[in-house]
Length: 608
Image (cartoon, rainbow, N blue to C red; front, side, top):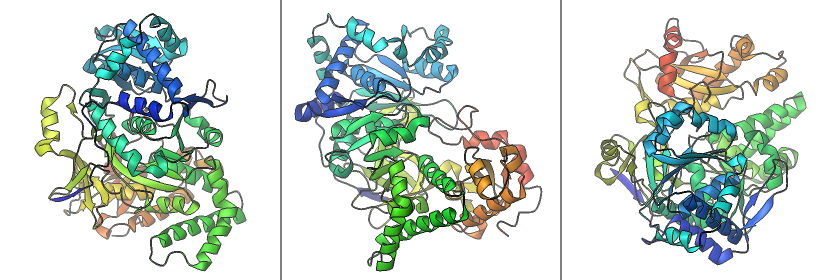
């Protein structure tokens, strides 16, 4: 078994909690801005100092205590990412209670499962619509005592309700929280079955965030650093960022509506961002689509994109970029790259990508335009990142070395195992599942990977998703899916072929990107239904398949694709809230299409 470890840079004493992280921030920079908030979607960003935020946290926490919330009680939050989410999170922690996030897109059935399994006593709903969703399950939730609506003034009401209590009523609760106490129960969105409740401790978050602030000062501890959080705070990745901002010296902003993200980036001007690969794919594809109105513009963008990739690749060589490439890079910067950076706020220097693999070409493109994407790896069970590329040492195509204080092992069968103070305490109400996942003191991730000579981890696939063809070839679908999904009009890809003679794929089209792509290729404004059978579209997809196949052997290559007439979404049940395809459900529900793939000879995209 191959094992790599990185020594901890910061030790976390037993008395440390997430509350301690806020108190320390106030102690060292109480008068400086911690958060910038908005009262209206287009309103100004209003600075909130660390001391002001702490005072508001304590006031809301007193309101929670007055409302009957006790130490260890579970309190649900069902809301988009907004200032009040973070305020309630820290207020619940200060009251000694345990916040339980619920995705704001969750169905009534999902809400019922989470609230019943966690034993939630109180829920904060963002809107009346969210409260109505919760209300449809109240009859099955005997432990749920109340639902408070944020948009109806719940936070202000709590501040008033607790004003009669002495400050000591909450500070005693806050100071009694310890490192090993449960900080939150996050229900994994899961691609199959009911979500599992992952119990994460204050120590899990404190260890990771306090060490990350020292390990990645370029992002978290540099004067002027700031990030705009738009990922759902119900997801562990966003939750880690929320706490890491406080552990460092960054400023935090919230963007509740992804539709306004470009405008929000322009006004907030973050220096670093955290996102999933699909966001970066969308940024690139949108920029490419805007440049495709005329032949010259399209050619300039394609040239500038190629220059960015070549420049980034040259940075990884001993010689570095040559003089001609440096000149081309400067010209491309003025013509294209600068406008892209401006669209992301103008000050963006770093981005962290997680949740799924980021294609190498995309990583090189963004680094080439001046925005380095640091790909990382982690799971809900590890409070988000276990490894991440560092600004001063990045290997595009890997997910970086182990973060300080963590260990990574590769088992004999290739499975990635994780160990350290960031690993979760267990699955809520599931001791047997916990014992299986934490066998031998190592968390079994279910992912496959390898570690290079510098200790950098590379993820190659999921154990359960490995496809074994009829010829006995083991195929990891992620490589093919990621490369094919990079095409501008491709939305989602599910590679199939288990016990079949060759590899095939189910493909969905991106309805948002389709009009621009059609216009640039001299086609009318096709609908998805029309595009899926149009010869020009199919020819483009065949070319994309051939390009994706360059990453694998002939036996692993995609031979046929089936283009669906709709996309996978969270609403229709084929995507998780963290934008992962529910592979098993797709393969089950579209078994007839998979059968059809193998009813005729393979296409010319990848000859046998």
